Image 1 (cartoon, rainbow, N blue to C red):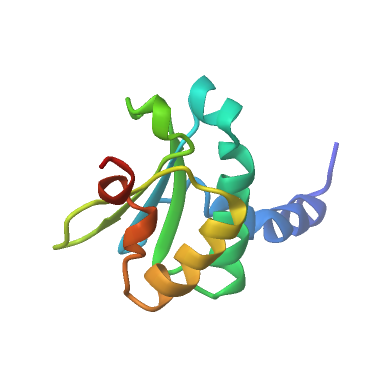
Image 2: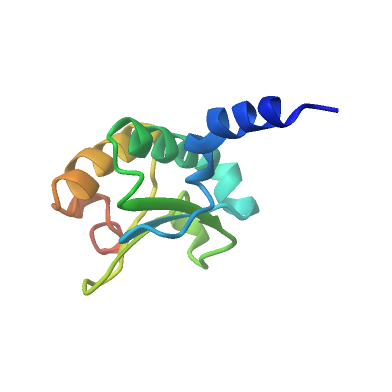
Length: 123
């Protein structure tokens, strides 16, 4: 059995990881993590979003979570970005490198990366 101090230390150490399940931010990033998404590489994309949001100091503004099948398996890994008062942005065929760019340009800079969106990939 761990002491209360040890448990508190574990909690504090893991706090940055908890952002994955907290939904308090103004912006929600949702990564499709059904079997199709995982097979296409969604797990490293999800991990990259969590790490980059934390590294950028955006954890008060942005929450990162996962969901099941989004229904567009041919475009996996799929990431949806929800912002209050704005249309949902659906990024497709994501990679960890693309996720880093989305954090920097979209989540920090406010500019949608249109070439990564479903509209650009559905022509």
